Length: 406
Image (cartoon, rainbow, N blue to C red; front, top):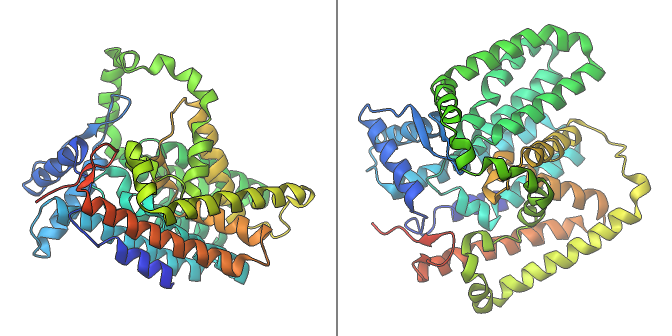
């Protein structure tokens, strides 16, 4: 709990040290127009050329209106801090969900430490104070997980929870389109789980799930119209869509999953300035080397115990992990996406839970000091990174760019 609180507090230090490039500036302008009654039908352009659905802008319009309603001045700093506040609300909700959902000490420990790992993660901290569509997804993902869990485990109200799951599960994909693939993976896993264990319940709740999905698609109608026009004009080919097949063999999902889960991806923000940063802050480099060495030991131990890969404590937690990481990864890879680090905003807080799960299972005797050690080192790295960005006015030669100046 202490690490989660500290991680939340760090999201509010140096509030003017935020990314503010073309995408962030355009999103802020659209949010400001929304407060004046001019709500955009569609969002800003995606990396594929097609515009994002309008939900990606509407949620910032809502945040802007809430800020102004609370008496705050609307500017890029306050809007980014509202994103950080929403992330902290997601951590608070995660803590409550952990108490409500998990009944065994084993699952509760994995959940709380996993959330703490995400709360202290340097790149997660930067992403969750950014005026970017992906940054507002975490709160929704916790709501969806809780609803899905109740759908499977609350037979008296399973129809209501099936409807609510269907209604909410497409919203993240309307904010960041690759999250639609995650929705498909989660629904597939939940459907299979129900089919194997409670087929009657699945048949009874399927119409309610379908109704929720159909209603959840209504906000996407303007985007469907745009996508049809986009395809008709041949813009998809112009944006490089025809060259996607070779990306299947780049395995970008696996490499990004590995580096992001372990917090070894500060180069995502710093790019060309990474070596200079590590040279000026050798303790961060030492942390990265220590983590990498620890992972090698953990992987060796996992391989050594490969005959016991089947978890005797099979639970909803395990299956949800499979849906999030294996299903999502397979679909993204086959779709030819070159996966970026920010794609993992949609799997909140599961990267941390995956690492906590592996440490809990394969480092049983060391877990009581390894997990707090990682969280503590991540906190130090996060503060060091933010302070470096403050002193240098950002990372001009990196992805971060020049920090916003009021």
